[in-house]
Length: 167
Image (cartoon, rainbow, N blue to C red; front, side, top):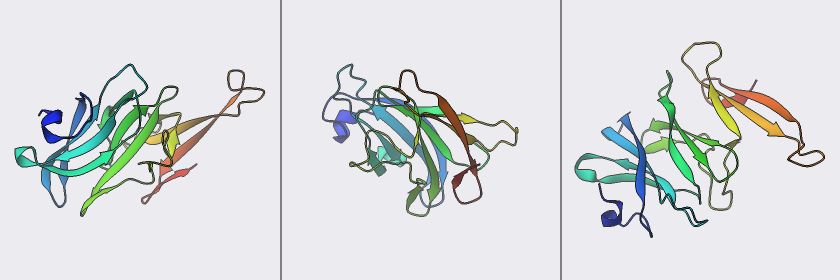
C-alpha cells in the first residue's frame, strides 16, 4: 500500500507494522501503524484499520513520535492490541480492543492537547504470572532533585475485566 496515494501523510511515511484483527463489525482487517521515520522533529505517525481493497475503515492521527509500532507480542489472551510508541525519551503504550464501530482505547489514544504522551508512558508489557494476559508496568521517576538523578517507583496496572487498574 502506498500511503501517499491515500493522502495519509503530508510527507513520505511508511508502515512500521501490521496486526491481523478479527473485528466484530469489519471482519478480517489489518491494523497498520505508520510513521514518517524522519530524524527531524516533525514526524508523522498514526494508525489505520484497513479492510478489503485497501479501504481505510478507521484512522487515528498520532503524535510527533519517532516510533510507533506493534509491541512484541502485539496481543494477549484478552484479544487486546498493544502498540509501542516513543516521542523521544521513554516508551509509551497504546492499548486497543476491537468493538462495534471501531476500537476501545482505554484512554490510551491521546487527544491533540494531551500529546506527546498518553495514559501509559514510561511503561513495559509484562506477564509475570504467565496467565497470557499482559500487565502494564509503569516506571515513575520522581525527578528529585532532578530527572537525571531521580528515583523510580514501579506501578503494575492489571486488567480487571473492564480496564487496566493499578495493583
